[in-house]
Structures are given as structure tokens and as C-alpha cells.
Amino acid sequence: AQKITQTQPGMFVQEKEAVTLDCTYDTSDPSYGLFWYKQPSSGEMIFLIYQGSYDQQNATEGRYSLNFQKARKSANLVISASQLGDSAMYFCAMRHTGRRALTFGSGTRLQVQP
Amino acid sequence: EAGVAQSPRYKIIEKRQSVAFWCNPISGHATLYWYQQILGQGPKLLIQFQNNGVVDDSQLPKDRFSAERLKGVDSTLKIQPAKLEDSAVYLCASSSRSVSTDTQYFGPGTRLTVL
Image (cartoon, rainbow over all chains, first blue to last red; front, side, top):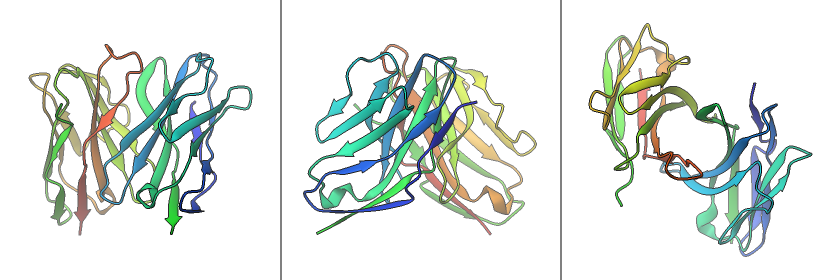
């Protein structure tokens, strides 16, 4: 069975600094996709970044990058130059090839301090 | 391009009452998902549609929850009768297999409070 683990319930970061949010996963399938979503207090899940299990390079999207370590089964999100608007819940999720629905972790609440 | 639309945004009902939520996916997205997000947890899949057919409803409490997507576009999720533990945010998402990443895009959610 698939499982996503986010061990940091809450994180603080100073504005303009970088922060890493941890995510580990468990699957026996060689083909899978990993996603990060941001959920502000308004409730909407906003897609940030995607990493495929066969991708050779780590994914990047603007200030977001994914530190993908396949052997360790980790897919940590790195946010560079944090902004006050980055304060939100962040969820790591995995999609199994045979099942397109996502399995989510429990989330990390990030607070950016001025 | 318009995103996923959901209504209502908020709903308060008493236990044993019924409630319905509506979702309109991104145009052209054949796959539609309903997730339940209980406070402090990540979303969990309730049901997945491909066009107007059900692909996965293994986690749907079928004694009280039902969902339909009759014309393969918008969808309705119903709870009848509601229980206190149904208090949650109900998120609708859609995706398209024509996009290589098959990314799911979510609506704003409906926050349900059962008293």
C-alpha cells in the first residue's frame, strides 16, 4: 500500500530565507508521480510541482524545487527566498500508476516571519 | 481558462439532514475526483469518475454518500443522512490524461459543518 509521511507538523522561516519541507513515501511500484500542493487558509489546494519516478533531474518551478532522492524514497520541497504569502499548509502526495487518485500526507504548516 | 468550480462554499446542517455539493471541472477534463478533508488531515479520495462512469468508489460510505456525473461534465455529491463525523471540507478535483503529468487541479472546496 502507498504511504506518504510528512514528519514536520509545523515550520517557521524568516522572510527571504530558504526552507525545506520533508516528505518520504513508500511504494513497491517502480512507476509513480509525486506532487506538492499548497493550501492557504482559504482552503483551495494549489498545485506547485511534480516529479515523475523516472525523471532524471529534480523538478523546478520558479522558487520551488524538489529534492528527489529515489533510493531514500524522499521528495523534499525546497522554497527559496520565502515570502509572507508562502504561509500555508503544504501537502506532499503520490499517484500510483495503476490508481490515478492521489494519496496525501498529513501536511506541514509553514509560517513565514517578517 | 476557468478553474474547478464548487458550490456552496459553506454549509451548516443538523445531523440526520441531507446535503448536496456541486462541482464543475475544468473544461475538457474527463476525470473528476471528490475528496474529503477532515480538519488536520490530508484529503482522502471518496470517488473518482472517468467521463460519466465510476472508476473508484471503494472509500465512499455508500450507506449515506452518493455521487453522480450524469453527462460526464459536472458532478453532485450527496450525503443523506449526515452524521457529526461528516464535518469536513469536500474538495473536487479534475485532471486530463492528455497532459503528461495528469496533474489534478482542485476547486475551492465546500466546508460542511454538521451540528
